[in-house]
Structure formats: C-alpha cells, structure tokens
Image (cartoon, rainbow over all chains, first blue to last red; front, side):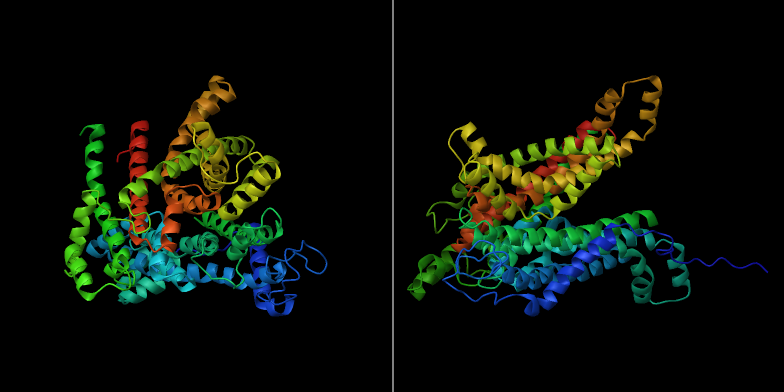
Length: 282
Length: 312
C-alpha cells in the first residue's frame, strides 16, 4: 500500500542555525528589561527629587553619571527612564501589529473591493512623511504618551498590513489551504489557524526593527516637548534638559543618548538575526 | 504603446492620493478641540461676532460642504491667515521651504557619498574586518537618535573645536553651507545605514551575475568591471530607495531643524504647534506630504528613463 501524500504547511525552523546576533540582541534587551523591573531596587536615589545644592556635578563616586541642573541624579533618572522607553518600544509595536496584521489578512484573503479600498487607504497613509503625520496627530490630540500610541496605531499599521497581505496572496493559493477548504473548515479557521501562522513571520521580524523606530520616535517627541512631560524621567526629556547646559555639563545629554543607542542595538541585532533565519528558511 | 507615455499617465494616478491627503489634513485640523472663531476673536468675543465669523467662513455648514470650501481655497493657494505671524499662511510657509530643501539635498548628497564608499569597500572585501565593521556601523547607525547625535556634534565640532556655528542658517551661499554642514551630516547618518546595506547587497548580487564572469574571462581589469558595470547597475535600486526613505528624511528634518535652529518647515511646524497656530501646522503637513509625493514621482520617472525594462 502506498502512502497518500497529504499537503502540509511549509516546514518551520528545523535545521536552521542560530546566528550570533539573536542571543546577543536577546541578552541586551533582557538586560534593559531587568533594569526596568528592578529600577526601585537599583536606582541610587529618587529620579525626580531635586537638590539645588548639588546641581551640574560631573560624574563622581557619589553620582556615577553626574547630576543635572536641578541636582537630580542622572543615573537614577536613566534607570527609571528605562521603564518608559521600553514601554514605548513594546506598546508602540503592539497596536500597529494587531491592526496591521488583521487588515493585511482580511485584504489578502478576501481580495476584491475590500482589498482595493484598504490598499487605497494604505497609499494615502504612506504618502505622508511618517513622523510628520505622527506629530500632526499628537498636536491634534494633545501632547502625551497615549496620543503617541493612538498616532502610531493610526499610522504604523501600514507596514504590517503590506507584509501580511503579500504573504496571504501567495499562501491562499497553496495546496494546504485548498485541503483545509475541502475539509469544510470555516473561513475564520483557515485564515487564523492555517494561513496566519505561516504568514506572520515577516511581520514579527519587522516588529523588531519597528521597536527601534518607535523608541526613537517616542524619545524624539519627548525631546520636542510633545511626548512624556517633565519632570518624569525619560531619556528624550533628559537629552532635552541637557541641551541648554551642553557647554557646562555634557553628561546630562550624553548618557541617556547612549542608553537609547544600546537598547536600539539590542532590537536591531534581534531583527538582523531573525531576518537571516527567515532568509535561510525560504 | 510608447515607452514614455507614463509621463502623461502617471500624474493621473496621483489624483486619488492627493485627494486622500487633503481629506486627512482637513480631518486632522477639524478634530482640534475648540472653536476656530473663538480662537480668531479671543475669549471676550460676543455671540453675534462668533456667529458672523461662522457664517463668513462657512463653519455653520455641514462638514462635507466645509471640506469643499477647504478644497476650493486650497486650489487657489489660500491656506488662511496665521494668527502668530499675522500674514497669509502660504507666504509664511513658502519662506521656510528653501532651508528645508537645502538641508535635505545636502544630507542626501553626504549620505550618497558615504554609502557609496562604505558599500564598495564592504562588497569588494566581503567578510573582511572592514566589511564587519561597516555592517556594525549600519546596525548602530539605525538606532542613533538624531536629536542626540546633533547635540553630540555641537558639543564636539562647535563648542569643542569651534569649526562650525552652533545654530542658524546664514546669509550667503557659502555661509549657509557652513551652517548646514552639521545638521545635514546628522541627518545623513540616519539615512546612510539603510542605503549602505542595500547598496552592498545589490553590489554583491550584481558581481555574481553572468556578464561579470564573461567580462572577467575576457580579461577586463577588475576596477573597470566594478565601476563600469557592477556599480552602475547597482545604482538603480538605490535611487528608488532614496524615494522610499524621503518621508523618513523629512521627519528627521523636523527634529534636526529644532536642534540646530534652522528656520525651515520642521521648526515652523513645532513652534506653530506650541503657539496653537493650527492653520500653519495644517499647511506644513500638506506641503511636506506633497513633497513626498513629488519626490516619489521624480524617482519613478528617473528609474524609468534610466532602465528601459522598468514600466511605470
């Protein structure tokens, strides 16, 4: 008796070696998550407590990264700031990811008029300069973190929708989808249980570099005065605070900037590594 | 069908996008809390005066009608009056276009040169220490916040070494170039990693193609193959990449202009948001979106003229 060849979904990740960038990136991101979680324990002092007798002190044993113009400890502010900047990376990706993947899946699977309408919406959204549209939306809604997330959700979905849609266009023609359809599975089951797991990887890989982008955007907004408001400790605000004192106190702006770069490198390594693995898989 | 017919047909495809842009900008300004008439007249305005303004500007009409008023004004170049500058918005915005345009062009030039050098080195010495360092540079470069990099540049090159002015724009051409050098470099550093990566990849892909093997077999010198064939053919996908990234560059100018106090569109946008001068914000958003559409159009045309295989 000969076995019948049953069409199955493409194989997953077997036999693909892990590039060095993945563990390195994961270690960096985990380091920052640990700093964020443990900030009440490891921060040497209160991030917003002012001490006007201790202003603009250079890095020393008492204040490892110096103090700012209000006498606040830069290291403590940097440690507490991790919470907000990591969150901007996480939620900044989460909402656009969910919206974009859903729209991409619906457009790609259903085709026709729904696809055409959603794609025109996408054309208009990408014809705006991304950051300018974010700023314009935040200006309308009023400065703050929630406006930033809403703006990102309204604008950021396009990249995910594009990636998922193009995968759906290919996968919905494949044999395993036809097999699922022949078995009488519902449309929802085919889309979410059969196609989506195979279509989502490019979007997941992109979400890593998107996290870098969102951290940069969020801190830029705070720097411009449109994001998180002082005296909250956030890296973009700290850099803005230091700008007026850059001639006397370089340390106020320098260290939070390095923190952004270091966190961004972690996500970029993850993105590079996963992209390499995805390339090896295809 | 004639090869260059797209010069006429392509602009038609832009109409739905331009329509969409005008709708989005209209909705954005419309969502701003507060009555425009009250903003215009001040807190102590009488109800009659406000009603008169509503009637004059059509604010009492249904929203769709208001949109068409808006569109009609737009087509005539009427963007309203700025409450801060006490002048027509169009003039206020137009004055700021040149500094932003110069900044972007200079940044594109710097990043093109930087990327061409880095990508050529990386692609010809694949896997070497230089290649690895360039790849690391592009990874780090992607995560560099430009507002921070600008400040670091000011600290080193302006305050430390005294080579460049801290801020401003300058009067003569050379003076302006001197003023824009640091902001443009800051902007270029955020673009160069993307271009370098892609140019490196296409250089490597081109150098493995058959015509390169054939040229090598004929005994054509390596540098002639590289610059005469491989490099030229790799430029095309890179040009379209500049088009894709122009929106990103324009976003970057908002931040960079603020750091270096360059009197461009980005700085105008930020200061107008704080001044609640929303008509100016609206006009800047619109002008910048048109800039992206125009750039992509030009990039499409350039690609089609340079490569006969491309159809637009």
